[in-house]
Image 1: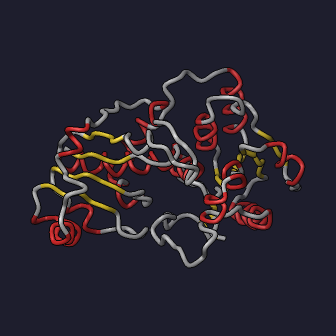
Image 2: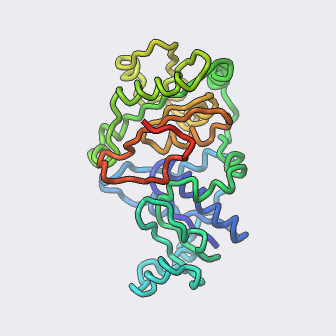
Image 3: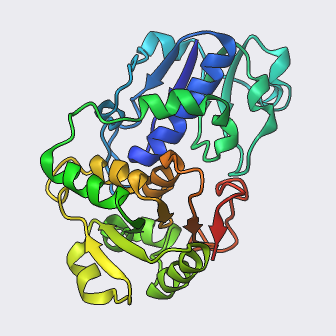
Length: 295
């Protein structure tokens, strides 16, 4: 069996699930998710999260404590941990703790029985099952009339989603120090990149957890739309709506990363920030797909 530890919000859980699903697919075995970390008290060290994958059209199997105990996470000795990390192909059972943020090639050598502990933020871990994930990462709920109207508008023009994340990036000190908040100049540069790419006049669809701030601070010459149908609940629909735009300008957020990745327009232009983290010495060179634009 493959067990993947879930942590973080919806976007992070999607990375973790996708990596686990790829490994389970490789070994033709079942994937279980460990939700125990989501249920612990964060003591304000991070934003409290729930099991958010349940909003999608996928089947989740929750790992039991007995399942998790098979991997002897706490009792493994140094030699055992080193062997599992560097030579996993020699092991029958592996507790795979992600080491750093870069893509780890040994991932595909992890055996049939593996516990995945990490963020696994690279499409390299799961792009081989893209078709499966596109089918699974669809909301269970039927599309409501407001969201349906937005979709019709987006597909009828040269639509560009523009995502601004504030929320815990503003209110949480740890999130602020780790991720940082993108300034307006990034979005100005990003809009220019998309305009240069497109032969038609673009229309900008703004998505945010703080639309009032966006209305007060964003000014572009292009026609702008502030997508407000999912402000009170069902926030995950914003991800789905962003994926229906022709092009995407993402924030330093896994939420809009996934919106862009799920976008099936073969001629899409995706713009991402060149500095994903506030601390510019922290880098993940495998996070942004090679076809996306950095600015």
